[in-house]
Image (cartoon, rainbow over all chains, first blue to last red; front, side):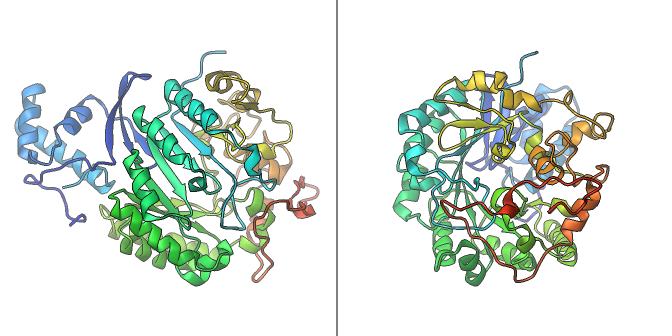
Length: 94
Length: 379
């Protein structure tokens, strides 16, 4: 069900109509969604690129902790709150 | 002048033709006929230019955009360029085959308007019998094609108490989003302002319902809300600022900073038949008139909100105060705010509605009647 909250075992993905798009004019990533454009920062782009509906949140945090020099637990908590917000905005599905 | 940032969004008014006759239509009172519209080649070229400039989203609108048989071609061009396409349709002329064709070309999202949450209201406001049933079917076609759906609900006196039913309708139709958009008073809506203006008590009930429903439906249905600005204390950030990140192309190729900008009499617009789009964006006098904040008089000039709401809406300033550069009079800091508050109380139940049609002889009420502090009634 769409209303449920994201947890560590969720396997998030972007629905087909939410597109991570590299904009060659502005030379940065945009997220294109119905009637809206978002500008994710560098960390958010990393997270969004890892969303494939197969990795769960723990696995995503594991990948991120290899790239960013920070403890797994801290990354997992930050990633969870980011994805929770994006889930509430209906940009991310589980 | 420094180079302006590229635009993000383009509203393409492909045609003014429409099977509905809504009395608050955002098209101008002086509707264009089919023979004034850009050709397939001209629109195609405009869309390529928009993509080159950095436009990321194109809103394909009208009138009724699906009346253009070449809509499919336009979607194909935009999809190839990675541009996100929103189809903004009344839904009454859509078939499943057409929807499939548009989806196959790469359409990203569909917005269907519902004039009411019941057939009684929808058919009355659109002045078309059977419209509601056709829209329900069109919404099903959209979901059958696995496209995301937005329900657009334009709100006024006749349907403001249907907020709950509108939200239920959106959930029943498996919509992604609903836009509860209170009528903004330009063009046809300005002509019908007294008939469409809701009661304050109804506005307060509506806002309360939306707050509760947003919380209840978090993660299930996105509820976007356009407030009835005559009842507000501060103006909307109209278009995200004049000529800041979006523009409109009319059916005949006129390029405007917003769809109502032609109501400002001294504006001079350029046309894509004569100049490249990028040049119009950078240099058109209409775009540069109110770009940024340097043009602002008081109270906007020294206001800390000037980068938040950009002085509100130029067309509304003109329509109510007689001068487009004034602060939007819905702002509580505007000397004309008292007039807007009186207008907000001037709604008339059961007043006559003038439905949208070609060749309307503009009655006196639709003309801009400036008000002053000495003559606060104006019209």
